[in-house]
Figure 1: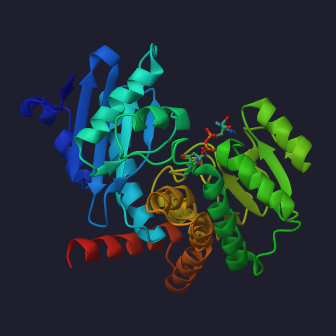
Figure 2: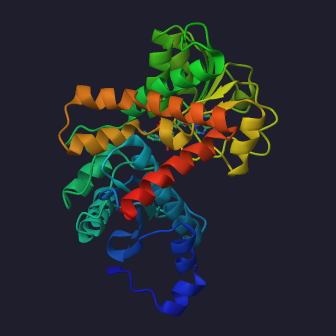
Amino acid sequence: MSSLSVPLEHARQSGVFEQLQQFELEALHFRSDPAHRLQAIIAIHSTSLGPALGGCRCIEYDNETQALTDAARLARGMSYKAALAGVPQGGGKSVILKPARIVDRRALYQAFGDFVDALGGRYITAIDSGTTLSDMDAVATRTAHVGGSHRDGLDPSPITALGVYSGLRAAVKARLGSDQVKGLRVALQGLGNVGYELAKLLHADGADLLVADIDPDKVARCVNEFSARPIDPEQISTVECEVFCPCGLGAVINDWSIDRLRCKVIAGSANNQLAEHYHGKLLHEQEILYAPDYVINAGGLINVSLGMHKMPAEQIKQKTRKIGDTLSDIFDRSAQSDTPTSEVADRLAEEILNKATKP
Ligand code: NAD
């Protein structure tokens, strides 16, 4: 096992310092533990508002640089998310480079738990793409710096869905003049942990659901339970509707989809919905109201952060519903200054972080 001891020349060649500067990271940590097939990176963007909190991804990467960039980009996003959610956390993220074959999954995550523990609480981990609550149970056997395991009962997904629901209503009110969901056509892309919970809330309030997932069982469940209409996954982003709700992949607003969208509002849980920064500007020009992803999907973070601080569940829900108020403020500022909502959110988050760094 070895923690960061990258020779300076190698670090320069692999762009480590470039990443630190480009994403304004406080620190990058690496660990290789061949006995458990662990290769992991922890990126810490900021601890000025509190210990860095952010999930652990375990996915396949083409190369190490791609993994590094993913961790760095996501860590910065977590700082912005925590700042606008008003929770006492900084931003961090970890990635495990998924091994070709996982021999002992529990041992892998225990080894990752040792890595997290070695940072002494500057970084707190949680689930993300490719990791589960059971993986976090294994992490929790080695470190206290983990939120969202079966042990603490802080499953983020239902609360994320609640926050998205509240944000979606705020967006609909700002764009269409009423926050009534009844009769609205909502095109839901991705019916996993968050998408399914969100479909339940939308259906209960009378929304007309159009749904897509690459997993036909998940589609069938929503068709049966919520009378949803199935849509081809290739077409869900371009179907005519009031609200497009991305809850699956990132980068769904891209050069291909931007001219094909037929919605008035985009409000969903997926991370990194804009493929490029300029897509936020193009949405603004097309009068499609975009609820910035890291603002609307902060419910899971709120749940883990405040749950670890022992806040009662009902108060956590109340705090999560305030995501709608934060978004209403962003929509007002965007309209008044004729600035894309994505840029308004970034500026607000940066103001909060700058104030915390330079008191
Ligand atoms: P998930 O893996 O449970 O669900 C994602 C779903 O998207 C899956 O059902 C998958 O089959 C589907 N999907 C994948 N490719 C698709 C495609 N091309 N077309 C249609 N569907 C497709 O993940 P989740 O936990 O529900 O999270 C969904 C999104 O929200 C992710 O981007 C995640 O990063 C983000 N997010 C989740 C949380 C949370 O609390 N779970 C919090 C914040 C952000």
